[in-house]
Structure formats: structure tokens, C-alpha cells
Length: 159
Figure 1 (cartoon, rainbow, N blue to C red):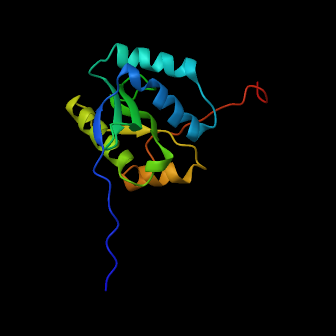
Figure 2: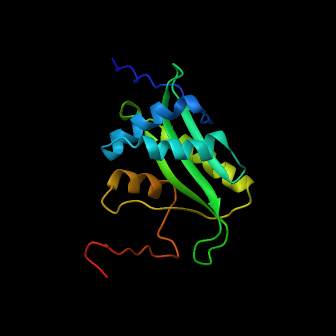
Figure 3: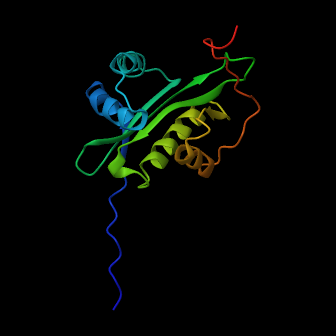
């Protein structure tokens, strides 16, 4: 007698973020970063939700109950250090109860589709080098080291 296959949740519904999603995004972000940043998210929602534009992507993923369980934010930019226009994914988060369920993959898939529609052929992101789960996610999605190197200086220690 074989065991029944585990029941899979339906694929998340991916849609544009709306103003009412801010609290859920704050909660999900705080789970990953360890702290709430209401002022930061108010500014992000003002730019990406209140004033959407073709070059901006702000998406949410809903579970079968209509609850927001993930989000992604990105935009097309072309001004950094002589870079051609490219898509930037600058924030992705998934509720801890929905990790490894395809939520982030569906969000990224739709983000990449929108970036292609905006005419870009390259997408970039930055990930902390010790954030293995997020690094693994982007590597599995086909991201590799790019043609730029990120450098920084600690102003408390440096010049």
C-alpha cells in the first residue's frame, strides 16, 4: 500500500501590490530582516503603489484564502555607472509558512516577464553573501555573478 501524495497548495495568484498590502509586506519583511521599517515601506508604497509606472514592478502573491504571502519589488534603471538599462530586483519576501512552495518563483517569473516587456535584457540584484537561502534561490533562477563588482566603505572606520 503506497502513501498518499502530499497535498499541494494551489499556485499563488500574482497581482499588483495595492495600498492595503503594506502591513502584510511590513510583517513579511520584518520576519526576514529582524525589524519593522514603517517609514521605509511607506516611501516604497508611495512610489510603487500610489504612483505606478511602466518601469516599476510591485507584485504580491496571494494564497488560496486571499492572504498576501509574498511580494517582489523592482524597477528598470539605466543610470548606474554607465550601465545599459536593466531590471533591478531590490526586494523579495515570502511568509515563513509559504517558503519553498513556489511563491518567490512565481513572483520572479512575472517580474522577469514585465522587465522583458519594458525592453530590458539584463536583470540584476544584490544579495548578502552569507544569505545562503536567497543566494540559492537566485542562482537556481539562473542568476550568476555579473559584470560589476559592488564595493563599500565603512564610514565609521574609513576616511
